[in-house]
Image (cartoon, rainbow, N blue to C red; front, side):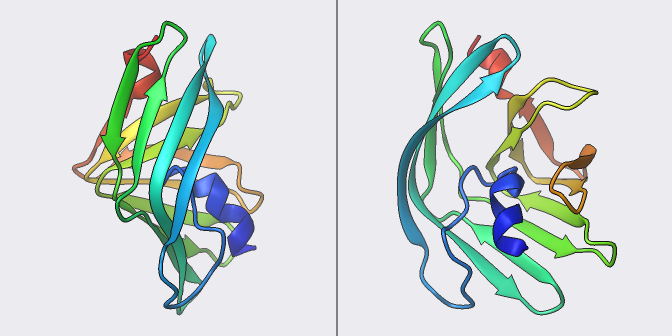
Amino acid sequence: MKRRVAPLVLAAVLLAGTGTAAAAPPEPIDVTFIWPCSGFNATLTATGKSATISLPGDRFKIIAPDQKVTITGKSGETVSYVITGVTHVQVQPDGSYAVTATGLNVVLVPKTKSHPAGLFLTSGTVSWTLNPDGSERTFFSSQGGQVTDVCALIK
């Protein structure tokens, strides 16, 4: 269950590690993929390292040491970020997930009935919740953090 949710949470880290381990070193990543923005597709290229770490009490965190991402819009406009934040996930009794991202992260947000798909840079502390199937329950709430709409920057 945790391995399935990690990519959805990327929801905060951009890319989760390929395995869950208590003390395994972060795994290298070098990947390019497409993610929808409202009205166009963005191209993301991520490099660095990532790992998912299991914690006691139905918790895990996704770390991204030395992770960098370049995001390109349809016009060729690009932004680049060093996204070394941490995403903390607590599995709730009903199987849903309470997610808190700290530091700098790029969050991939899928389309829902209430909003289009998008990409967001978060800094500081930002939280949201996911249903047991990984779909969005609540959108971002900020505890002193900031959320920037990356799609709006690279139109």
